[in-house]
Length: 346
Ligand SMILES: [Zn+2]
Image 1 (cartoon, rainbow, N blue to C red):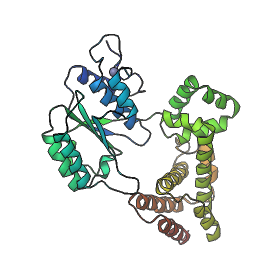
Image 2: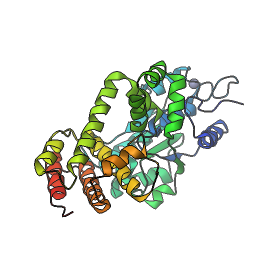
Image 3: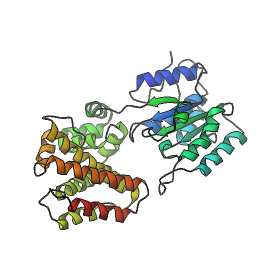
Image 4: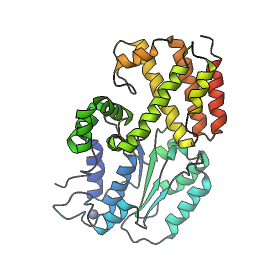
């Protein structure tokens, strides 16, 4: 029995299902892989592309994918000519029909060196409906030997017709305990940090947000520094949203926010997580937390707030986060957010 995707952690049922189908030459021609950032979508996608083309797919004694043959190595490093990726450029909120059409032409016209040509479409939830309809033709009648991998964070915006023509894969994330166990066993740096600075270790595990890869990179001192700053800015911002804080404090906190779209989006998301914990501790005695290592810490921060104010601030920050991802003007949306919070009555 071959080991299936042994380098991809967890998600056993999914690995058996996909691996089994590939070994039996019954791979679906399209997958929809759904998971939040950090769930390992991109990693799994590369591994599926490698498995589909692994030269040792039928050789006993090798895992699927083997990761050592020529084809696997090229695919994992992103150098394979028959594995193509369509990603949204970072300054645009959606992927339009033109990009999908280019991909479609390529799919039908270009020659293939690989057994399976693989097309990866990142951020599929950001394809416009027109782009999804253009995609539909490829999903209905894909050229032989083409496999399409759609990646999405949530599938609300994906057309039912698209969903129904793909195999749906939902990736689950790891609990903080599982991440903590894993990185302590597999990284000396993590174990050192655990023993020397438990608070920093816990902060990295929480900030990793379900992703072992992210946890490991946060253990790296330079990354950890950036993440710590982001956490501190999120807390300073939420404190400045308290009813007794003045507008000057709020402005100072938001002026410190990053001005690059992707970073601002991450910063706002972090603020949402702080607020989410603070609301949770107002509603329950000891709820699981997503930002603070313990409910007690969240409760201390939440003390100056009434729950209704927290919910209002939460909604305002969520709206700003949405604007940020929808291409809103970065400076204007932060200013508007601060203004709306300042105007809250109680
Ligand atoms: Zn291989």
